[in-house]
Amino acid sequence: MFEQITKDLTNAMKEKEAFKLSVLRMLKSALKNEEINKKAPLTDDEVLGVIKKQVKTRKDSKAEYESYNRLDLANDLQKEIDILNTYLPEELSEDEVKKIVEETINEIKPEGMKGMGIVIKTIGAKYGAQVDMGLVSKLVKEKLMNQ
Image (cartoon, rainbow, N blue to C red):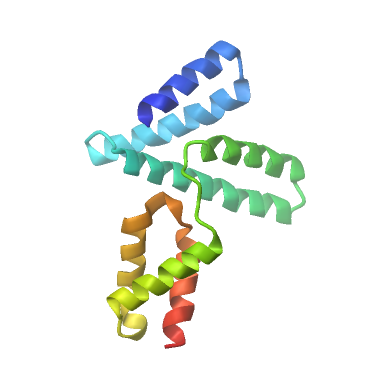
């Protein structure tokens, strides 16, 4: 995964795609920082985690810009999100996530809200970058409160 990003960065330089180059440089910098903090090369799952974090940060900023009616900046962030999303696997739909949450709760049988962390951790470990963990958290909470 890291090699693919480096290759795409080189291609963006050759093609003179300044915007894409800028986004990929920021991503590579974030990956390098994570690698330095870990003191070991990143696995593909860890690379996906960093990319997902970058996307989340940009989505939060985009929402903030939209609330202040700065659509020019929000549009730029959306372009950045689109570039970063090319490296992420497609996320599961809300219905699929609901099904996964139900199956995991039935499998683990947590004791009320105390088991929320275990359920979320299990889903995160099993599905990783395929699910929106914010949505998972919300659905698990709803499900466990209604038990």
